[in-house]
Length: 361
Ligand SMILES: Nc1ncnc2c1ncn2[C@@H]1O[C@H](COP(=O)(O)OP(=O)(O)OP(=O)(O)O)[C@@H](O)[C@H]1O
Ligand SMILES: [Mg+2]
Image 1 (cartoon, rainbow, N blue to C red):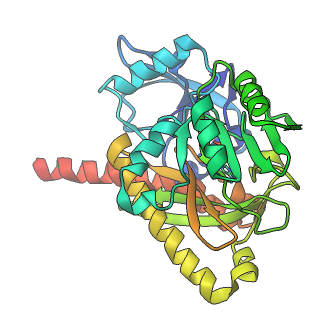
Image 2: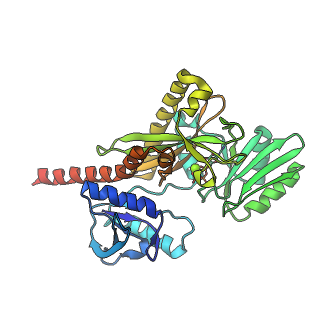
């Protein structure tokens, strides 16, 4: 099976994940190769693939035609126009059987989920940014978050808090460098935000109080994956405790992974169990809803907020999730399961296909 990703020479996006994927593939007896859009010859469907060695992480180059299935792990951020165009052509070409897909931008994902009555109650109010919507939102909520539609990893996020005299702003630029400033009036705030956001589409979102740990944004990362039988299953979840005074909990922004027992100390065991039931129910609903709109998915990472009053919120859905949270919690068995899951799902799909073929003959 092929894995579609991005590379520069022999430097692939997420190399550690691919090495672990190669180890899992070897254990399952599956052949795995990596390739980027540039490696595809659209005229005859041939692919220049790179077979990762699970031990040395060196790559052996070979040419492939008609891989059984392709897992899409291509992250279309900060890529050249030509490469993105080629990526779209590959995805639209029926000769390639591709599973998983990068989800649409944050605003489109919100629209898809908002249309589902059982999910909308767990979504923070979200608007497309304009000076007018920001003005309305900051009047209504003490804190609002602004996020660029086409970024990840906490890049470009701004947290605005209404203070007694003016507003405070925590902003991350597109290189994740953080800054703090204050403005004294609404007009000054609107002008400042207009300058920061220039040329980028942004969301304005109701800020949630996620300070389950004092002065630290604390939320949950949950991994939803397909089993070999093709059903959604929650592989695991863990809490992320953000760096002190950071507007986000992201692991690459200084956050650390903690077991979910953190909830017990805050809400007690009984209440925590009820919260757990609620976020699990929400996760399955989100999985089904997203898949209905975005095609066959293999996995999703959900950022779930549990506010200080115990209410469950869906902050974000990631179509190509990381698994670092399990490593951080030292849950290596869970990590390995999370890595091998997509392979087992794909092998499950292939065995259904081959038994269907046998039945036809
Ligand atoms: N409305 C909100 N209220 C409170 N905290 C929030 C809100 N939105 C985001 N955050 C915090 O910021 C983090 C990053 O937000 P989000 O996941 O939407 O952006 P991202 O840049 O796509 O992140 P990543 O790609 O790392 O998952 C969240 O995990 C959460 O800790
Ligand atoms: Mg996120």
